[in-house]
Image 1 (cartoon, rainbow, N blue to C red):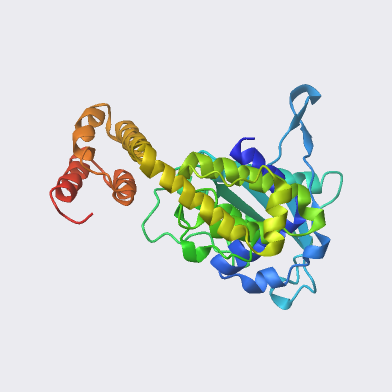
Image 2: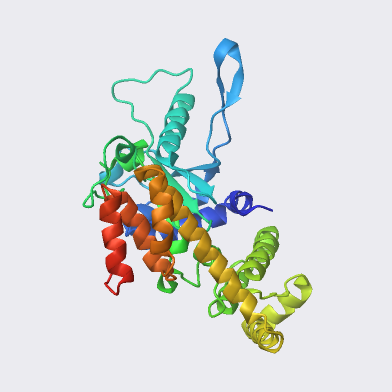
Length: 361
């Protein structure tokens, strides 16, 4: 199953929606007060709506996943908010019009909610919190606010703020971005299934056994059995593709037995060691190095295309030799930021000359 399709199904479970909001919104964005005011026991799925198009034709106009969650007691800071609408949008590729799409989703949701009703002077729209989850390779480079699609983004532009009721974020002017490629190990709580799932988008040999075992433990409830099996099967595919490690989760009865005995993490770790030994014996490590090299080459090619689109065709050929000696993915990411920041190709080339000549990017 494609990665974004898996995430769509995963976040059709109320348990995973609550896990995501508590970890990503509450912990990573410091909005614990907002999260604690929500009554997750009354989460309600907002199903896709249809709207009338030309000549009365019906067409679907909705985002992938939307949930209503009411506030517990509507504290003073949010007394006019009857409920919060959560919109979750998994993306495995970058969409540079994502902010505009999100605003369209929010507008359509409000129009459908009031279809056939009368909106009065004292009525208010429910706040909407859009969350975009980037699960694909590379970094998300699209604007997170509609205003940044209209005017140039400045370095000191504030990101969308989930802690302020006055934030345009709740009115559809932007979204919270969960870019799984940028997560640090310290971001990934082992007692939260959404955090573990995000970490497994880009698994590492070092952290994979503990994360997979922790995910099995977190989803250890009969109502979540379908979710558990799907997530572990997906994690196995990600692990094989990224690290070459077969988690061995095809036999769920054995996985359950190891989990009950407390030996599951050690089992995953042993499979990791076995794969590493096999790599050493058969020289497969060269294949991993080649895979890494292919990934870096793809990132260089993407930077060349971006530079060519901004500075013209000549930038493509001139940029290739300047990038040839850069193998550090963090430096390549910095070059992508330079392409956005620089006004001319000459300015970009000067920065690259400095970096490849021993300067610090």
